[in-house]
Amino acid sequence: MRILVVGKGGREHALVRALAESPGAPELFCYPGSDAIFRLAKPIEADGLESLVTWMKSNAIDLCVAGEESYLVKGEGLANLCEKQGIPCWGPPKESAQLEASKEFAKEFLVRNGIPTARATATDTLGEALQAIGGEFPTVLKFDGLAAGKGVAVCPDEASALAFLDEVFTQRRFGPGRVLVEQCLTGPEVSVFAAIVDDQYLIFTPARDYKRASDDDLGPNTGGMGAVASRQLVSEEVLEVIEREIVRPTVNGLRQENLPYRGFLYFGLMLTPTGPQVIEYNCRFGDPECQAVMPLVRGDLAGFCLAGAQGQLRSDLIAFSDGWSVCVILASAGYPESSRNGDRISGLDAITDARVYHSGTRIDAAGNWETQGGRVLAVVAGAETREVAVTRAHAAADCVAFDGLQRRRDIGILNF
Ligand code: AMP
Ligand code: GLY
Image (cartoon, rainbow, N blue to C red; front, side):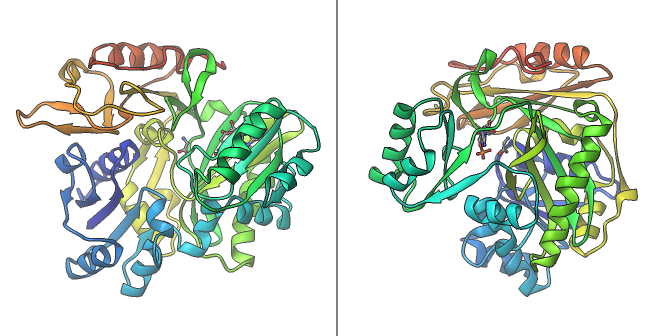
């Protein structure tokens, strides 16, 4: 089997590793990939989506796996172009990927399908937004578009709301777009991933990510500074409610609204005192949740994704380990406001009982790993108990050093 994985981050490195370890040893290709991914998957030369799909066609690719969301909604859409060429794609077409690309689209879908979610009003101007807030704080403001994780502000007071609205409506920091004013929910967050194949689904091991930059959930929001994954993260009862009130109605809604879906769908949930509610959908696996979840997946992920992309949910091909997986992110100097490239990374060879996925690294002229981006590495360890997984992951992370390294010490500990 010949598989092409689209993306270049730690999530894609974890996906590529899991696919490479599938029985049958598929031949792997990547676009755009990274130096770490190139060790498992051959780089391909393409100049944009069209040429990528043409390359896939002429090189007999059996399956395209979409890691990163941006390609799903770019131009004609990765999955749409694959479909035209008859190439099975694990990842939804552009129309369905609006669930992630447009928060307003997602909110209307949720409301239409009776799926629990925070009340929200779409606004076009600063005045409309202030009226919708109605002096009620805290409030949540969301830019309606892809904003690289920076488009959401939880505002405790009017000053913080005005600052965000100024960025959106006056400075146009994210480009043109509306703002959703949303009711602020409270409770622990959980990321649930379902593999969806038309009207069927399989729920993967739930995970939780740590979004803030610093220990104790302080500091600015980031792409994610770590994650834990375990079946035990959510009780049997709560998982049943999530499946009945959220996952099943979502899958039914996609069918009824003629939104084809074959791929991972990520449900960002808040477990509020009145039950689980949807905060967001993402049309892909989470990063860094993927790095925590993939080591728990057993069996034939490659076969599972290929069958799924061809319209068959083959739940018999994979299984999930019990136990816990803990992922610690190592970030470069300046992250998340900026990042620093070119810091030499040492200590990777000293890691024995953990996996290392590369989020932002490259190999320098002398053949050494160096930083290349904000999130640099994900160090992931597993064990029967959370405590042991935490100890292993942090001990392995201690082996790695580079100038300006930032990491959290409470990943897998805080919120338990
Ligand atoms: P999002 O980009 O939609 O995932 O939002 C980023 C983060 O903002 C979430 O992970 C939550 O921590 C927070 N958030 C989003 N919506 C709400 C809400 N309605 N109430 C409280 N917190 C929220
Ligand atoms: N970990 C959050 C995300 O992937 O969006």
